[in-house]
Image (tube, rainbow, N blue to C red; front, side, top):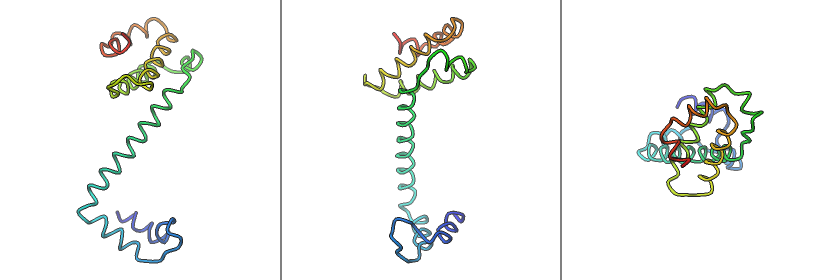
Length: 132
């Protein structure tokens, strides 16, 4: 908190206020210590995390998991990737285009890895259910 307040002092307050002068450090100090701050921070953190997840899912959906790309990865990285995609698929309860895209990505990955790795990945029951 002290580092943040020191940065407010150094930078002169928010840059979006068009040069409005005031006791920004005092304002932020009161906000940080008020009863509403915990709820605001929790809601803001949840919103930012949801936004990051959304961007991550978009990146997964648009990634090119061709054989050349996968050949540069260790098996453990591929397993981790498939399990992370599986987590995102399981988070999406309803059948949506994003969910279908993620399933297609898993199928593409499985079609571009060797049989031993494919067999290992398919030994995961929830992954088999998703692909069934």
